[in-house]
Length: 307
Length: 307
Image (cartoon, rainbow over all chains, first blue to last red; front, side, top):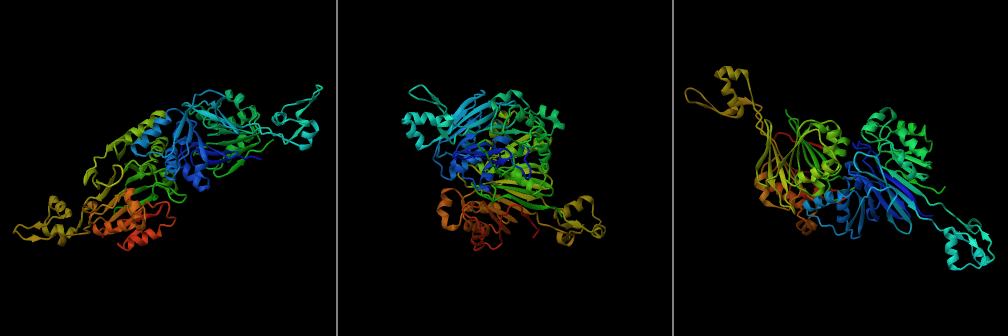
């Protein structure tokens, strides 16, 4: 079965601590490696966890607060110094291009590979990337500055079909492909045979929604409905919900509420304020609303399983 | 006696490793805390070694290669988030101001403290900072892009004078101050009494020279002559001296040679290429020319003693 694995590289909010780094995640879907946000020291975290830099071809930056992108120029420089020549795609706020280019200009660095920018359009459910295995869409988050979340979704994985079934019904190549995709079979005499009776290993495509920095916003629910894994920031405990509102962040209670309303399978919380040396109380609070919640912990890998 | 202590925060060259961070140092002279270069993750290193951020009022950036400044915006943001209101001085290439300002503009951050820029003029032995205890001068390094080193020097520490000496010679306040500074005493009958016979605790001011990134350049010697501690980069071993030349860096042998020619008291080498997992061979090579050499090691504190 193809991989669908999320590795947490950083889980702190704006002020890092000696134990927690700013936001960054590495998502592997079917050996496509997506770097999601790139806070300061992301390249150091990648090295620490022995993750290979050069397999990353797509970077997704949610917004231009430093704790979500300040590791980018260092990471791009290292790719260059390590000999990269393959194109690299960056999905990001348009202004990031200026920020990157001015720094390479003043360091007189000329990358040996091509950076291709895909500026955010801040549209919900907007397709920004697809290949034969995966598609990625933006959702618009409710933050102090323009900010996008991302939904990563596997494409339909073709089901399997027994040779005996093929022979029994005398299936053509075209019919086999359609059945694997989920079609019914209509026999010559007009009988309909349901797809379930013809194929096996039929898997529901898995999905991951990343909501980096956002206020509590029920408007998100329709776009992240039923995802297998939801990452939702939980900067504060509920006793600081006023502070959360003012700073355009969420509480753990609010993250749990969004997960529940969206009927996701699993919730992961992160982006913990530096005031919480131990994030356990945030977990307990989110779980009080949505039981299947886990903490983002640096270096840990979460496999998204088929349900 | 007043402090003169150097803490290494990062000692790697352009590509950090999982064990070594890019260049940054914290120098404490008489409770003035100078941050020298600020590679990525400097703020994380400061936290790790439990060094207080807000005591830093002066930052010195040698040049605009990322491994010497990419930690700066994150550090400045954290100072702001932690409530700083005190002015902060940055001695740096003029272009750094644009790099910093564009990033705060796009993150819509408005610092609660004032950043005061002091652009490098790339002049040797040029005084860029002084107060009652310390002076700092630039030296021009020989690197691929404009780059300054820095010389930090204690001001003359006033010697002590015994009360009995004051009474014996009937010294005025003005005379006492002159004697403490090192003057001779000329008595009424014209006799000259050497300073050494009148004062004690006469200390030679200590000095530290920081040569971040530079080719081997004997032109440096006259400016760093006799410093107590010289930090000189040693990116490569001598068997890579061609590569050192091409990349405008030095070998450990060359760092030792400069230390010897400048008759410094102690040499510290750093900025090790990622290819040297263990920097010991670099130390052995430098010591073959200049015995009193030490390695820059992250978290270690070097006290500069009076000699």
